[in-house]
Length: 167
Image (cartoon, rainbow, N blue to C red; front, top):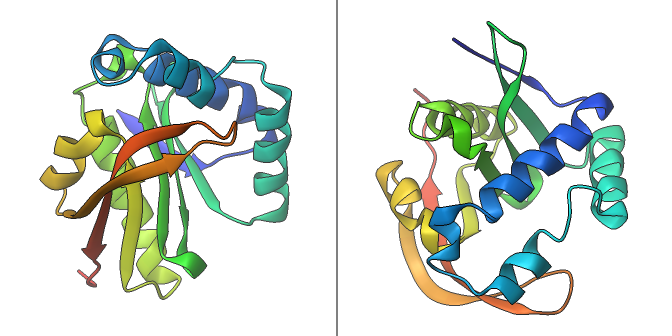
């Protein structure tokens, strides 16, 4: 079973580990060069990203949730949304738990949280490998584009959006 909960400061290292594992997994490497992957997620101990996540959780500037196993309390994935900007920022699942419904639970919860915070639409820059996941969850392609990573390196992405509705 999967439990969703708000991320805490003690989750930051696990979140970075999942991000790194997902970005450097076999699926992603079929779409991007090693240079882009390394720039996208340089290390599980990336100080800049650690500080960024700590600050986002502390300041509540984005809603970050984690999915954990009820059996082991192991974090299986995470996601984030910024309702004030109508932006779905992240959905990442540890490759160990891929295709087990973790990503679906995360994105569904983030959409519900966004609606609760009065967002009527979400947009995102999807990685090429995640296009089918987002399409499956009702997101439409706006355009193929470039996403500039924090390092300044550009990576191909797909701008996508979805109208949100109360259930």
